[in-house]
Each structure stands twice: as C-alpha cells, then as structure tokens.
Image (cartoon, rainbow, N blue to C red; front, side, top):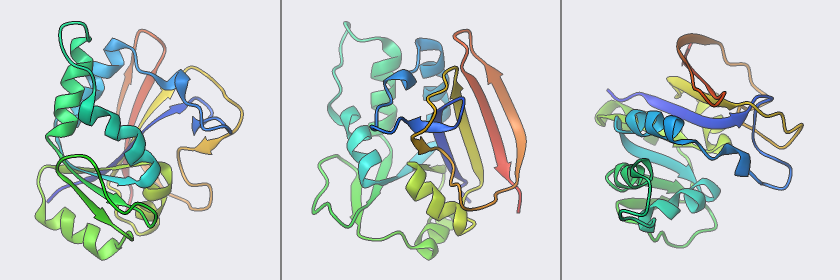
Length: 186
C-alpha cells in the first residue's frame, strides 16, 4: 500500500508564496536539492492541482547537459519517470508525458490509488493537499522551512482544519533550511 505524502517548501512563518505568488526565496541550494531528489525517488505518482502542475511541468523540458548542475538534471529524470495526475476544471489538456487529467478530486479514487499503487504517492500544492487532509488521506507531511519570514501569502497548511502530527524525522542543512517530516495521527 502506498503512502500519500504532502511535501512543501515554505517560509519559516508557513507560507509557500508571498501575496503576489512569488516564491523566488524558495529555490533549494544543491544540498537541499539532493536531499529532495533522494526523497522523490520513492514517488511513483504525483497528484497536482492546475497551478502546481504548471510550475512543475518545467521539468518535462528542463535544460540538460554538462552546463546544468547534476542535482538539476537528476531531478528532471526523477520527475519525468513518475506518473502524474492533474486535477483541474479549467485545463482541457496536459502537455507532459505520463500525465492524466481529471476534472475533480475524488477521495474514493485517491484511496483506491493508495491501496493499489506502489511506490508512494505525492500530493503537491496546498489547495489539493487541504482536500486530501480533510478527507483523511494524507499519511505524511514533509516541510522544508526556509530561514525567511514573508509575513503573509499562501499558507502551506490549511488554516481551517486541525491535523495532529507526530514528528518522525528532522534534518538541518548548512544554509539554514530545516526539514521536518510528520506522520498524520489518525
């Protein structure tokens, strides 16, 4: 059975982007990027909303070659090798390989995916993750806290539900980023 994992890069005060949608402060350094790459190797399927899909689709045709850092090209390969499911009412088609489009997020479908898929499933984007958290589908929350406070913006975690978490892993990086992994308490 696959776990459903929500991962987010966020500011220390809990936002994935500022009020204008900017997240330029969240670019991982090589040490963090390698850590993310290693974690993502266990992901067989990515679940995205439209906005997150549009951001992540960059990896489909990301520049490659000797001029690019190895962590960059490595992540592109990891991302392209996984299945993707995009949930959107506004997209009429997807333009990346191994990608399926759905018009709505159905908890029963995700529960069935968890039961029948291996390896793990990643859910990306706070809106979609909030739906999965509300439905009790998320098994683990992974946060990469960047040493910046941006004051407001798009929260990484939903503000209207209570989720009890148990810390299972932590890691501190040289540049000040802190990784925290939690299991969702049932």
